[in-house]
Amino acid sequence: MPRKAAILTDAAVKRTKPRASQFYVRDGKCDGLELAVYPSGAKTWFWSWARGKRAKLGSVDAWPLAKAREQADAMRECYREHGTPYPPTRGDDGRECRTLADFITGPFRDHAETNYSRGTTTADWLMRRTDDGKGWQGAFAGIADKKLADLSPIDFERWKATRRKAGIKDSTIHRDLAQMQSALKLAVTHGYLEASPAAGVKLPRLDRVARVRYLDNDEERRLLAAVNGRTDYLRPLVLLALNTGLRRGELFALQWHDARLTDSPRVTVEGGKAKSGQTRHVPLNKAAKAALVGWKATSAETGPDALVFPSPRRGPAGEVRPLDNIKRAWAALLRDAKVSGFRFHDCRHHFASRLVMAGVPLNSVRELLGHADLTMTLRYAHLAPDNLAAAVEVLG
Image 1 (cartoon, rainbow, N blue to C red):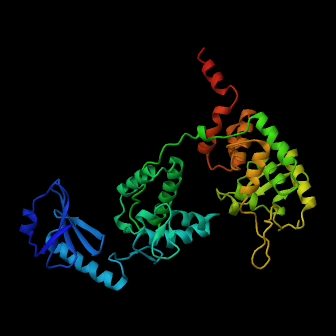
Image 2 (image 1 turned 30 degrees about the vertical axis):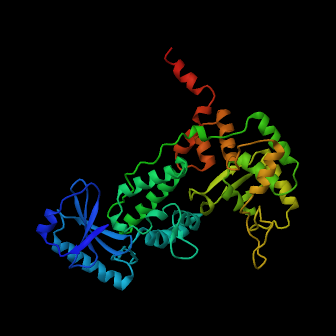
Image 3 (image 1 turned 180 degrees about the horizontal axis):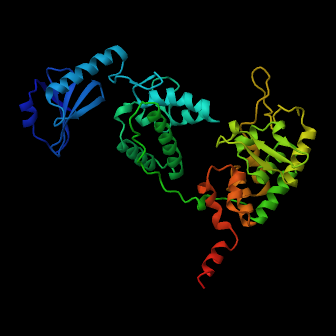
């Protein structure tokens, strides 16, 4: 807690001795200006504008008393005018951002909604307002009010440590931090930052091989028996997932004009609906083609622009919407098949694993999956038949 206010001088600041724990000294001449004194002897200026709200100005070595008072006066005036002590950072697009939250919910959100297939979800996951509008929630809610220009690598290192203590998996931390690094790279591109404070922060290492879940022969037999016994959308959806490796969102967004069922059968994933943003064509084998042909014969709407997998629930005005949730149907299917620990996304892993085990080159698997490079596809490399054994035999 701060001591009783006293009109400070440079000499008094220099004479102030450290204690066993950190403490603050208020300046009686400049409202809100405080000197933080650390046990190490380091001294730093802060300006406080509300209970628990302090903005760091700088160390006493770099900031003499007169400069600290001048900055505190400027921040007080900014607070009175804008409700925040931070002056705006203006990007080259003319917009103003003071805090990380300003940027994520403003310029980044707009960019994500325009350029990402699930941009709104991505932005909201990083940071969004609470329902009462008074706070923040999301992966980075804890540093939402941090001044954009004051962010440093240590903020993100502390964020990683806090998430780990909370029991968050490394895979989740890896995904969230990678997305924030991408967002702050955009902030640099548009002039909000000179350099990204998260660029050098290491992502948690992931054992990608250990995360590959695919069906063994018996599990595959049971799952196919269970799904072939159904007459609803789940049958063609699952058979298509197992035989094309399409992502769930890509399957939900399919329209009938994307499915070619005559000569050279294939489905086309348009760039705007793909995670990579790149259009790709995935051939249909006999099982996938038969599933789609059968489903089309029973579908009410089969026009070129009609959805292949429309939701059974209609919108407020009766409009047709794509599927967006199959959790209950998928869980019931797994119970019927007596298969556990297999997510719908694992159908994609199963597709890739079977190809690699059959000797299909990794680059071909990469193209079918829509990976930008081989990095993600390499998680399946250990499944290639005898490739490692053949490699070491060369030495003999």
